[in-house]
Amino acid sequence: MRALASLLLDAALLLAFVLIGRSSHDEPLAGAWQTYWPFLVPLLVGWLITAGWQAPAAVLRTGFIVWAVTVGGGILLRLANGQGAEPSFIVVTAVVLAAFLVGWRVIAAIVRRAARPRRA
Image (cartoon, rainbow, N blue to C red):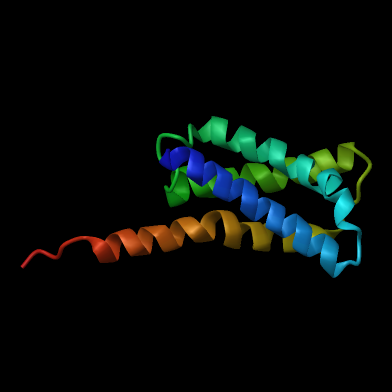
């Protein structure tokens, strides 16, 4: 159940990125799928590559690799599909998705560490 929740969180954060981006560029939200799918597919591939269900909250083992595959694959799919990928878009995508896909895992690790009982 934790793995499914983590995958859904990744997908929801990716959707939030798409909706925020489209909104900030005054693009209709109705076309969000066109922007979303080229990143959703590599996100799922990243989960498969890392076997993310085994350690869904792992920062490096899952989060970093899922982020890298999502950004790299998403940009490549956008280009293959005739969508733009300006350098500024690539930078913003990489930074925001790092904050989203790796960031929640970093926060979870900090919370887990803080919740551990201290040895005297």
